[in-house]
Length: 244
Image (cartoon, rainbow, N blue to C red):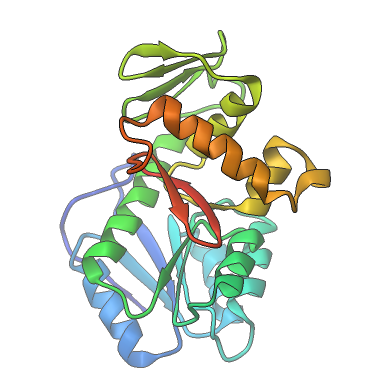
């Protein structure tokens, strides 16, 4: 089933963005379909995990909105199976609010997590962020990435330089790698494990104190007020997010 309505276009190919909603609650599914379609998105839907996998393969959506509590497959398993072949952003929408559930979904490959009940404004903002990321990534080719820019943050990858509001900032090698990882995943909640394995390696996956120390150092170098960060946000008990 799909719905569509004319509105703002988010994708670089000027096609109406395809959003796959995986939700087995009829009322929630109707709400999501009407909200998304009224904002210019083509909504595809599935009520089971197997149905979601089939629909994703057939329709190649630009983003997947995924409930975890499905009647056949758990949403975490659906996420893992999607990640076997696609990098399409996955935004989990679930009533499960425990940190372990969020971490499991994010570690499986989900990009973001919204807890029910949620405000439609927040949901739409999250969806817009990921659709813009999809559009931006389409124009890039492997091996051509020479710089990263997020708001007033810029990394010159060729010269290994960092800039904040146009002014060069000295970063250590580890700080630079950590910031680059977060900038490459802008808007995405990165779990402690994901960051530790990427920056320090698998042997340090449990050493979260490394993150606290280096995130604190980074905030002092790139934030106007490190106590009230605008860029590097903490997702309590889960990880960190670089604000888009």
